[in-house]
Length: 292
Length: 295
Image: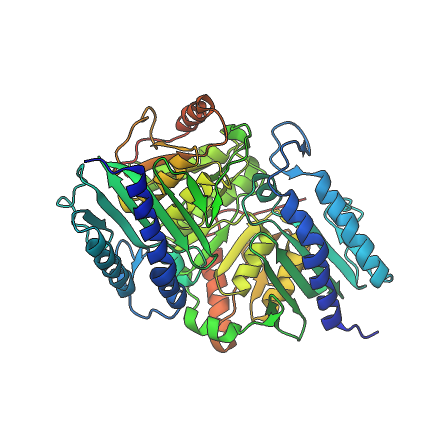
């Protein structure tokens, strides 16, 4: 079974309704309020709240009652080694992306709802209620920011003239083989005058928002290691529908699965050949393979 | 001479939202052809619009306040332009020029006034997300013309502690030499679990927006070098009005002027506990690896 364009659009509309009426207002009302107790997931940096779990179960109950045959993968219910993305239609969901932002009240937390089929993203909706930005798309139906078509202005794509999203992430253990060191060295290579000398980097603290900003052309690219399928599934679909591409974060990885954990998102608004050249020159600055 | 700071704040707010904002918004991301200040690979980009907007601001403030001095990014002359004790508008027509060129929605206009070299009025307007943040000395801070309840915001943020904070960092346009090395080494120390281990860093690409965000309680601090008085003047006044503190980026630079070129801006604390800020600043300086210096 492969879902039709109409069926995908219906899922997209379901996502939009759920985000606008229930999830967005919840997130907005709780952000930055005092969370005296939170679990420390990894090194105390990646913060998780009870609310995260509560919102995920709310999303799951709404989606499962409307689409009982679809599978469901969420950040909070994921079990390492046991949760696997199959070919079946599967909701892949991050209840609160940008948890640190959420805790601190920095207005870049959002909810990311994706649907994958045959292991590929086919529907995505991402809502940042603080800035009232709802990005959404489904395969074959185009990409939108709120009610407006995303139409990336045609312009050249050149690494040196690009503005890219980079994040520190929560893994901070130093060592020559550590991902943290490889990331920091990659950032230096990208910034240095004798390196890529890019125009600049930006960090919003949310993978989903970064991908949306690349999709809409506000940023040129986003390179990341360590995030999960639920961080990228929805954004990936939006990116593709807006003419962008998602490749691996490491040289030569043109075709990657959803759970590759190392990604490079590149905007549209230019020819495919320019995107490929951009990826190839970007990869030359990556300082070693990130391992997860 | 007594100056009515509140009326100047209102005047600048009107100027920012009605005249400057619409130009910035309509021209953002449409600038495919731009001059590079020096050399073809220079990252610091300036546009004709920058100059045009500065001229507009200059003419508007001069008509209303003919005796005040004026310092702007585009009319600044190195070695000649000095901040005196006279009332002086210090303005950046478009802060976040790279954002402006690239369509990243964080370019803004930053309008400040100093008296006796102290920032006493500040107005920052980002037309992309329609955010106006303003303050004047003794009058508190406003967001979109409404008084801002920063005290309850600060209460919700809890204590100001380095390893629980989110820090704004920007590498800037100079990408070689000692300052760049110091910046990168410091970022690494701030992030590393063996040193600062901050919750995270954010980069908005605009000093003025960053300071506005700290004043609103979205971020805890901002560390930078290389910016000028017009990048920080407005934000400085706003941040001071909500209990924030600004010191130098290098260790023991406790007392600095607006033209210090290196800055560490830190948010306010509940009940104005200056010890907490002092400890935060000292802990932060311990992560600074090297010395930032600018001509």
